[in-house]
Length: 60
Image (cartoon, rainbow, N blue to C red; front, side, top):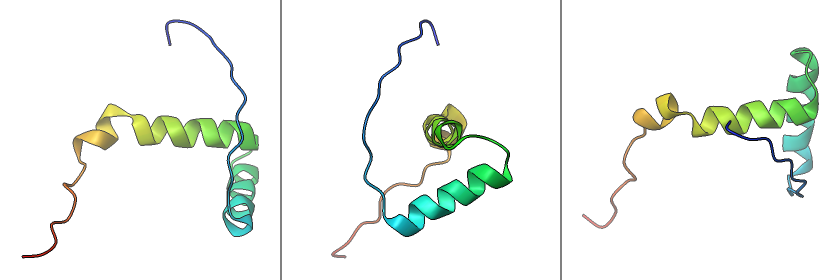
């Protein structure tokens, strides 16, 4: 990142999904905050986007 800018935000998650995220972060020895940072960075990485499938086409 060229600069550091921190921002707080609120994300609404279902309780079960939050529990899964907490368990995964704990098992990996990282904070929940770092878990979400890693997940977003992974989702936005160029390698992941390179293999993205086109959306399905309906109505054929």
